[in-house]
Figure (cartoon, rainbow, N blue to C red):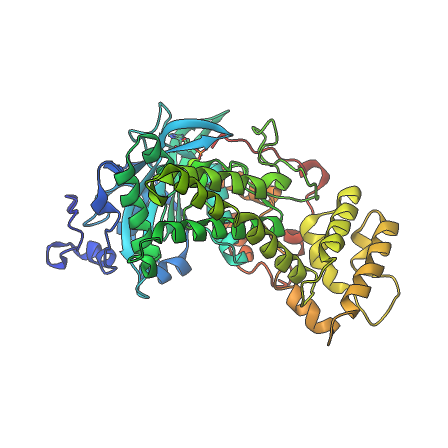
Length: 512
Ligand code: AMP
Ligand code: MG
């Protein structure tokens, strides 16, 4: 295999070996690569001991125009054993606010951009390995990712995609015999993540902190050129672009809330400039509903609790805007005023998105005054009764309006029956106030927004334990189930059940 990286990008088929040609069949589109210093530095992946494919996402491979079965060459490239033909891998530098504290320099400490492709549909996709060895930004850490956390990222990012949530995706999961030391000795793995861009809020913070407005503008204009081409020629493009980033972030927070998803480490370096869910670590889908559920065992103050996420999203946007002040105006006062105006758009965007999502979850066609109270009352019943978030919402579709009798089906899952029955009276009144209500049609629509299957911690944990013993079959099963989260899947009730009592509070920490 020819290993000489060719930053000019276009692979030259005549000089490639046969297997390389399979990879090179997908044209490279090295736009971010062209920037080079000071945005990123070239770094080669460090091969793993005995790498082997634990799962391959054939559907995504097909979308990318790659072979739907990973042959030897593709597996080698995805393991970091050889570079992608015609592309030089790199690690990006960034900064960030971690748990509220400013960290002036971070960066891809264990991630590498290994290719930028143009898909058969003409879209650009970046491929990034996570766990591929040390980089100049590893800060003394090992540059590796444990198999355990790689499985969680692999399964959850694809589950989120199937749920309709903007997210980075995963193409492959490669396990290995490479030991890594965390709380205990584990083995390392590498996932290949895929996204239109991996640019993070923290990259803007980094160049702003260094006092490099021109570099900051180059990065912003790269994002605009690639993702907002309609704004390219406008003098106010930076303000318009940031307005959209703020709206996307608010929309993403509404989606997380509506699914009971907790990210766990909402640091600004983990926030995507495209509003994608990024950097899956100690995340969790809530089992029992608690407004202040904290999924990350290392988050002692509950900074990133479920109920705090929307506000943290806003806080992170405020730091992105602060970093981008030099782009908004040469006059500091005018720049601040524009930034404040943009930030003021966050709350209405979030509340509007949230009201619409909850209306859909309750099967309401219209968003009406008073609906927020109905939602809050339901959440209070759930919190008091310690009810399962996903199951309770899924079962609401059983409630009928052609009777005033007990709401069987869902009622049997509730704890505080009296409070729930009282809520159902209000809910039925609200449903009947809509024109053309039809129980069957409403149930169908609700089942398209209230998932039956989410990646509960205990399910991930069972797949991890099997994989650690060398059996990857549970990963494949979960992958399939979670690719259809809204469908009833015969024989798979166990995957929609609450965790058994002894697996209710599996602790996940930042260690990964
Ligand atoms: P995270 O909390 O996973 O988003 O990571 C925060 C920063 O630490 C990022 O810059 C990561 O690249 C880096 N990092 C985390 N774990 C490791 C590791 N095992 N080796 C090198 N860098 C790491
Ligand atoms: Mg991170």
